[in-house]
Length: 181
Image (cartoon, rainbow, N blue to C red; front, side):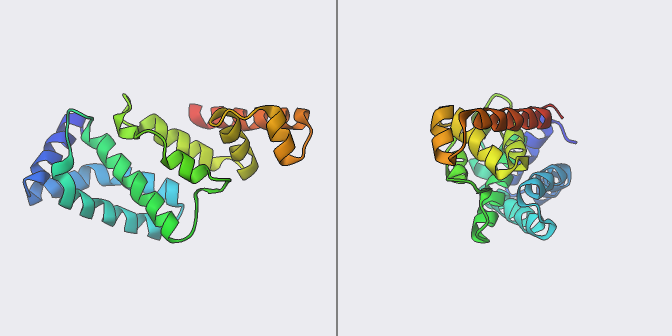
């Protein structure tokens, strides 16, 4: 894996239309970007198409990269994430499944590239949320992202509050396990 400074330099050279730098950038970062696309798309052919779109965007928009706002690796990871989500939407598949607006809510979240970790924690969180059962993901997002009470959730799901507590606890345990891996 290339260092952050090497990726920054390769991306800046790509902005100057340096084909050799672009080729090296592809060699250094494409496995990571393909991994992001594959985790989100869950389809190898779609992830390959996404990777091609990402590098087409990189070639055309490399001059938009500003190293003062973050590292090249994070900038590229965000592009891969966004292109993967776009590919799912084009196929009519939701980013976080058909979960009551979750896709739009997570897409409207702050730009992960601006995070101090370069968006890695955000991407990990989204991946772990995707691994949860639909009901558990909905409950966790509605309770901890929207601030709905257990009583509100019990009414929405037509389920006793104690059952909601159990489902939330199980969802959080699954999320915690995934995040610690």
